Every structure is written in C-alpha cells, then in structure tokens.
Amino acid sequence: MTKSTFGGFVKLTRIMDSLLWIVRHRRAITSYGKDMKRFQDMIIGKTRSLLLLVLGGVCFLGAGGCGPMRFNQEVAGESVFFGYSAESRPIEGELFGKGEDVIFILAAIHGNEQAGTRLVASLSDYLCRHPRLLGGRCVVLMPVANPDGVERNSRGNSYGVDLNRNFATANHVQSARHGEEPLSEPETRIIAAVIRQWQPDRILSIHQPLNCLDYDGQSEALAEHLAGYGPLPLKKLGSLPGSLGSYAAERNIPIITLELPRAADQEDSDALWNTYGGYLRAAITYPDVAE
Image (spheres, rainbow, N blue to C red):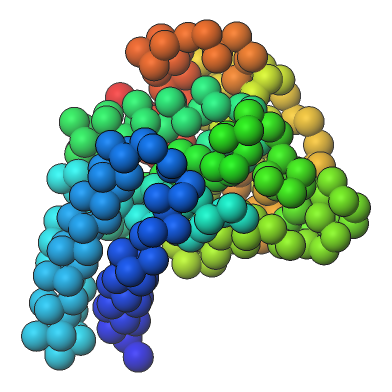
C-alpha cells in the first residue's frame, strides 16, 4: 500500500468517526447542559468538517485511491474530533496545513492551567490570517486536553488522576494520583493516539505556573531557538515520572513545556499573544526564523 493510499484510508476512517460523533451527539448535550449555543456551534463545526471529508473521500475513491484528497487545508483550520474524556466531554482541536513537518501543540492537560487554551485560540486565528506560515508544515492543535479538569478547575481529571503523570514511560509511578497503570485515563490515551497518528516532529505543551521554558530529551537546540522569542527563562526541570515530556523523550520527539506564570490568568487574549505568541510561531517555523 502506498503512502498516499494509506493516507486516503486514514481520511475515510475520519469520515466514519465524524458520522459516529453526530449519531452519538446526545451525550454531549448532557455535558454542556443548557449551553445550547455552544452545542450548536459544535454541531456546525463537525458538520462542516464532515462535508469536507466526504468531498475529499469522493475524490480519493474517484482517483482509485492513487492520490491525496484535493481540498485545501491551508485556508482555514479543519475541525478534528479526537475522542471523549472520562465524563464524555468531547476533546477536539484543529488541523492546519498538509506538509510533512508536523507540530503538535496542546494546552490544559492540567485543568487549572487554562491560560494556554486562550493562547492556542489566538494561534488558530493567526494561522487563518497567515497561511504562508504553513508551507510544508502541518500543525495539530488541542486547546483543551483535560475538559473535565477545566470544568472543575482542578489539576487532575474527573478521577483525580494527574494526566501529566499517566503516560507509559520507564519512570511511571503507579498510584491513585498517577494512575493505577500507564495510560489508564482516556485523555492520556487520546494524546498518545494523536502522537501515533500524526507522528509529530516536535511538541509544545503549555502549562502554568512555573514561569520558564522547560524541555526534555534531545530538545536543547529547539529550546535555545525558542528562548529568543519571549521573556521566559530557559530552565531544564528534569524528566518527571509519567509525564508527556518523558513520554516524548523516550520516543526521540523534541518537546518543549511552555510554563506560563500564574499571573497569565489575568491577562486578556491579546496581551497573552503579544507576550508569548512568539514561542508558538517559532515552534512552528523551527529551524527557520519566525515572522
């Protein structure tokens, strides 16, 4: 099977995922309660994404499975449904570009660290307005990795597990707080599945409140490059047990942890972007200089 044929089957699989999501959407109503406007926006976004995928699938089948789908992902972000949290809240994101240089950016793996979500939303807006940044690149965005924790404003998920200690790593520590076994939580399994599917060349995970630029594994060159794009000091905190940093490092994926200060909670989206947006742009364009 050729790479393009495999890519076509992956796209068609995502068509089926979107169909299943719409069939099962009543579960989301329970999660969002009376916030029907938000739910309607979700349905509209998923339907738009589904139509694009169906059109792309038709092109794929019409070509006998011999070429990539033809719709242009570099105009606007394509909505992506990754899966459900422990309490059946959808974990969603956006996909920009179709290049081979893949960057995975996620935020709010700890539910009480929410400034990163607004920063990722600003990046989405920026990419829509600056598609040239996407040349040869694919950017996968996950603005809320832990929606149950965000709902509670808690570090852990709905079971109290710290998702950033639950990855399958050599240094994982089995406990109620870290998970009785690696990848015991649906949210960490979703993140691991994203990494398997898109095979990112680098990862940027946004946290609070340690006010530094941290890195794991063979990421020093990337970290030094990013350090010139904002005010955070470069500081290697060390590989923490079961962390995403350790998980990526064991798979030789460069990973940066962008630790915003707690005061970032009080900043509006424009101020956050003006102060820290350079890190995200630089992570995307690395090793080239960001605009």
